[in-house]
Image 1 (cartoon, rainbow, N blue to C red):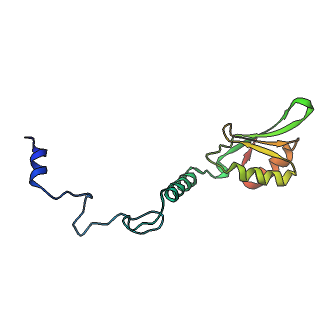
Image 2 (cartoon, one colour):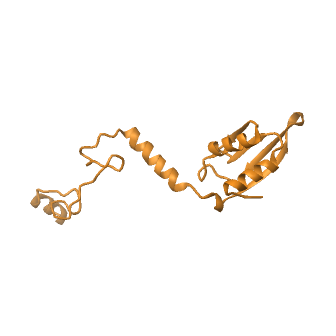
Image 3 (cartoon, one colour):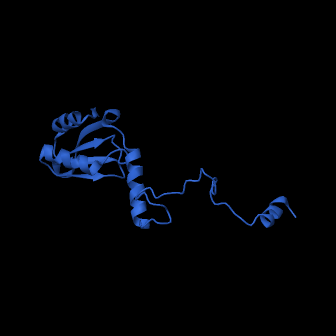
Amino acid sequence: MHFNERLAIDCPITMTRLFAGTAFDIPPTCDQCGKLESDCICTAAEKAEAERARQQAADRRSPESQTAVVTVQKRKGGRQATVIEGLTAKANDLPELLGKLQAACGAGGTVKAKEDLIELQGDHAATIRKSLTNLGYRVK
């Protein structure tokens, strides 16, 4: 018989937390509602959404620490598109930024989060550079 097996037989009480049963025991609480975990009424979906929001906030970076690269590309049919690169979807809220840029330019556009791109219809490089600088981004 090993020591651990003998210890398990001799000790019928099992501790679930390090300080359980002592004056230093602090029962775990829910991060979202603040109640004890045994009394928590939060659903698994609510907890997952709160954790996602916390992680997203932790991944955010300030605009001053990022550099946006603004270029104008020609498309088929002679159309032009202004493309903003260098801003990652993980560190920014690209759809919100797109909305601000669309309002400043009066043009349509899209976010390609997988490629970390923002595209606006037309040649709006000067307006976008000015808008991004006003928002605090460094621009090339």
